[in-house]
Length: 184
Image (cartoon, rainbow, N blue to C red; front, side):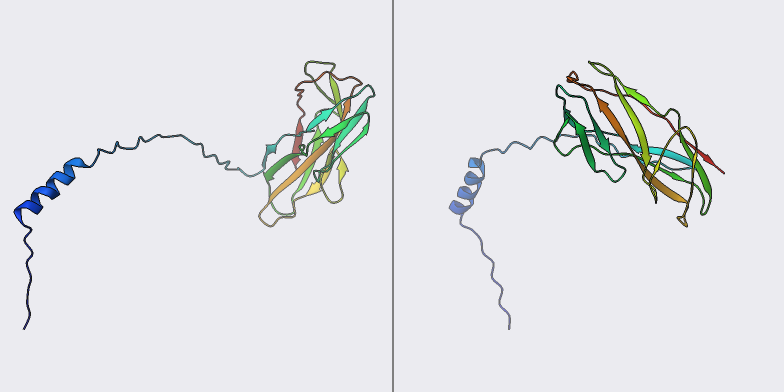
């Protein structure tokens, strides 16, 4: 045999419950904010390449003596002369592309020297080096490499040496260089 129980609150309890609901402070709705974000993709067509990141010599402190800062293709950074390296910043330029397996490619620079301009005397960048096996100095004379990836994709870093003048004026300096690939 089963029993069932029905609980009916007394009229006084019903009134207290309704009164208690009226006492609950109104909580304001939380404001919603939307922030847009970007998503990017690069879809490569065969026999193409693109820049992944720029050549960055990082933060440097000049002195009364000229010097150089070198970024190697592996990302290591060194200095000569009166230049002091500040922080850990600095990275080689990086390029990537899509060719085909075993295809030969000639790579060259538009100029063997570029100039970084800014608030002070311009600074020269020279001795561009591609991170290949073995590494090779890039110049206006083409250097040949072979695409070894079965999918035809490749990437390579490019380092260089920056000549910093004595008492170089502080500020941001920039310049451009051109890398040319010819698929054979």
